[in-house]
Each structure stands twice: as C-alpha cells, then as structure tokens.
Image (cartoon, rainbow, N blue to C red; front, top):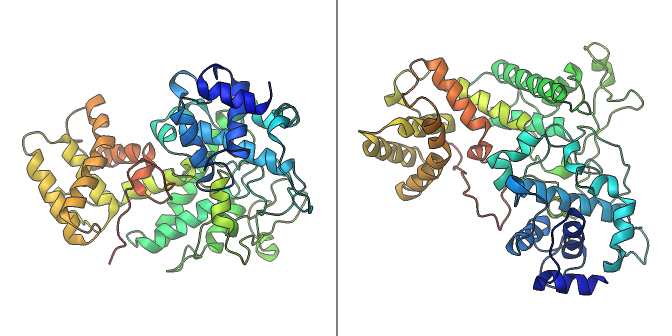
Length: 428
C-alpha cells in the first residue's frame, strides 16, 4: 500500500504497528512528511515527533523499553541523519525523499536504522535506566552518526568516534569550576581526569571498543582550551561551537604523552560551525543532537565533585544552601527522617529560599518534593539508617546523582518536556 493508505490505516488501527519495520515507516512519515504541525524540521523537531508517536501508543521499544524516550529519539535522530545523507542539499531542486520512497530509504540506510542499531551506541543497562527512559540522552563518549559534522555542510561520514564528546566534557568541567569555586583547579582537574578514565575503561571492558582509549594529550588539551583555570570559560557549550576533531597545539603535543589524533591519519582541528545566522542550536535540537540530560562521562564528574564538596560537612546543621551539593545532601538527609521529617523539610525550605537559589519558599518546597521522589527509593531499597561515616554518606550521594543526572539541571529540557526542571538561580 502507498504511504497515504498506510498512514490512514495505522492511525485508524486497521494496520497494527507491531514490528520494527512498521514502526520505522510510520516514524519516517511523521518525521519527513507530516500532515499536521509536527515533523523533524519544524516546531519541536524530534521531541515533537516522539510526543506524537507516544500519544498514539507507538514506540520502537518492546517490553520494559516501550516508550523509552532515549531509544525512540535515537531512531528519529537516525532518520534525520539518513534523510540528510539522501539529499543533494546544495542543489536548487533540493528535495527530501518522498513519502513513498521509504523502502529504498530503509534499504540504503539499514545499518543505521535496523532493529539493533542502537546497540552500537548504548548498552542495555544504560538505556534501561529510569533517567534514560524519561529524558533523552546521547551515548557515552560516542557521537551519533554525522553529529560531529558542521550543520548545513556536506557530510564527511567520519564513522564512530568522540569528536564532540571530549569538548563537551571539558566544557562541563570548566563551567563547573567557574560556577563553584569550592574546589581548587587541581582538585577539579584530578576528579575530571579520574572519572573520564573510569568511564572509558568501563565502556571498553563492556565491549564498546569503538570508544577511543584514554589520551592524556587530548583530555588536558581540551581542559586548557576550555579555560578550566580561568574564571570564565568559553561562552557556550552548544553543538555549533564544539564540533571539534581534536584540536591540539603541535608544539605542546611534542612534549606531552600520547598521540593526539584518533586514527593517526590527519591533523586535529576545531571547526567553528555556528554560522552568522544563529540557526545552529535549533537545528541540532530538531535532529536529536542535543540531550536533555548528560552522558555518564559528564554526570560521573559532577557526581564526584558533589561528593567531594560534602565531605567537609560534619554537622548537618551547617549546610551552605548556596551550594547545590549541600542542598541535595539536605534532601537526602530528609529522606532518612521519620520522627522529625516535617521540621527538617521546613528548615531546608527556608534555608534554600533565604540563600537566594530559589525565588520563594513555595517553589523551594516543590523543588524539594520533586528531588525526594528521586532520592527516597534509595533509602527504601537499602539500609534505612543514616550512614554513619562521612565517606559512606558521600558515596551514597554520589550514587544517587550518578543515576539521576537531571538533578544537576545542566542541560536544556525540550519545551514540551513533562519532566521537572531542577534549575537553580545563579549563586550571588
């Protein structure tokens, strides 16, 4: 049947979307040939398309992965990439593949669109995390196909790598250092390097050999490039300014430890792809190249920093509510309370509002309650007693944050996201 008939019968329920091929076909139509106000190339892009698909009960996932936001938007991002590869976008008669071209489109790009394509980028445990199910996440230390190429320029098909991931990671480190000077540059850098190494080792040991081995040259170059040792890092982490290809300084590279190029065949460089029209950010969001919460190399660093910041807190009555990690430690303490829980929550609410991180006590209370919904399950499934040692307490906080990166609110939620935004006002 043609595309119009297939869409009509799918929407009426006459044709069941009960296979990967059918799901891919209807997603292709909703992405590239919308008949209403949604589609990959307008409005809310991939985020709008996934909402429409979910509303109709359609998902690429099966069983526990049904309606998994990361999995479903991954395939929409793949459709966007394959559409871009299929078009001569520099021709005057530029056209995307037609609605009835799906079969040839799928055949041509089956490596990126097949039922197991996601396994090249995500591990089953990562994709099954509650955070990955509710919020769109990019792979750990791997770029999605073509996401490292400048937008609106020819595709180079560089293959699998972390061309944009190290700059994003380094920017996250530099931004953290500029926002909170609770730790020295040396401490912050040590934590960043350590957690990056751990993430790379874990991924490679888990079979993701396409993740590049750790390079001291690359890691330290990007930290320096993002001005980790200065009060103000580069002004943006957006995709258009961080399409990198491992820029490095050849003179410095001669005195450092490892070869900086990923494959040894070309010199690294930075490509400034922002463009004078300012249209890069929405285009990357349309295509599924901007996450709603970070990958584990970023979250792992932030969680380790938070744990380190709270190690010095001996008396819970002396929390600094201008520091996010102290606020989260206070919420974690409240999750263990029973007899004096309400009093503790009230003190916490007043302290956060007085510190100026949230406008008023009503909003502070809402923030706390939303955080409690994420933290309380860890109390219920573990020891219900407050950890005795500072080390155990910090480790529990690190674990909670590692698995709930949205608590850091470092990434932009889509305009139509139903998730709570844990954003705080800047520290005074």
